[in-house]
Image 1: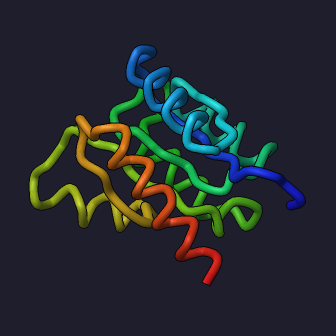
Image 2: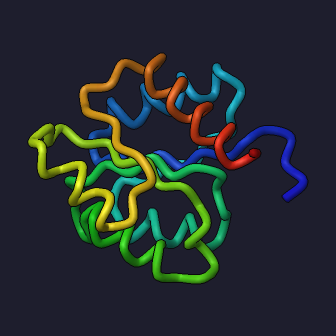
Length: 128
């Protein structure tokens, strides 16, 4: 890899929220790339191999469920942790996110500091 800072892909179709998360991640010592839909998320993940993907599940073009399934079924990207960001807090959502291949699940709205904590936890898990 040889990166100075972990690279985080934030996939969120709401520009304000995407920008907020991107700014907070950058201020917290991460490099950030952004995608507004699942198709761009798949392209960025395949070409840039981020350390963590923060995936909104309700996305245009290709939704987060399908984008995650595709990333997890591709040998080039299957190892990259995907954290689902979703406003759906029904009890079935966690199982559905897990079945799609999401490694963890953060309810929205998620305060940026809680999101940063989650990203650090996922990265620490990968290092061990």
